Image (tube, rainbow, N blue to C red; front, top):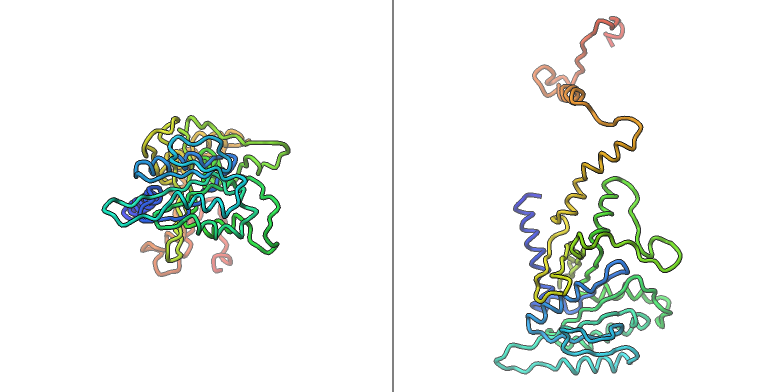
Length: 337
């Protein structure tokens, strides 16, 4: 990719991500965040809240699993145990339609901490989302824990899986994962070895959470995989590295975003580490390297297809030039062939 094209692609992807995080121009009415046991969606959710407060949007937190009201939430709604119709009516009551005035319209950010309790009622989710997203000024950001088993569904057997339905309804899907895991997987690909597994995918018995790596060395960075569906139906996909503003959830969008391909750790993994290569050579029983003299001799060899491009071999189909040595026996019959 040419440098100018690469720079344009980088700026376009980052601007699109900023537009989604800032809730500008109703870019995504329904945003779905998929997390795992290895990486929580908390840092990305806090970034949504910080940017919403800077934009003076009203933050409404809908809780299925959160006990205490978040510090920056304006309204806290306990949703567990409530029927969907009653819950939708309560949420919609906090998002009244705006009246035509000279003041800027009020925007609303709905944060749903877990969609898993609603998974058994997946056929009712489209109507539920339509009831709470009442205007273009309302944006819903919902989290789904992909490692949590789905309870016995009430939907027919031919109905799609709740996660399949949610990813189809969402206009933007964010998948979060650990940066340390992404680097380890890339290194495994470069060395053509099996990918490491963590958490439930390790296939071990018992309650297990895989190693998160040295989180402090990465600054708590998170890999964010974005998939946005435009109105035309075309999907825009990109992978970013998100570095939170600080351990205290610093105020304002001081966090940093960059493309995954531009991150120093991932670039080093893609290029390979000289120390790792030396370690691999030490494990072998013989030397796989070349001396300086062997390298010069190899570069000085002229192959037949290169010789065919010179004046001597040009136009003769790349004929093989052979010079007899002192130990060679001349055979007329073989020479005629």
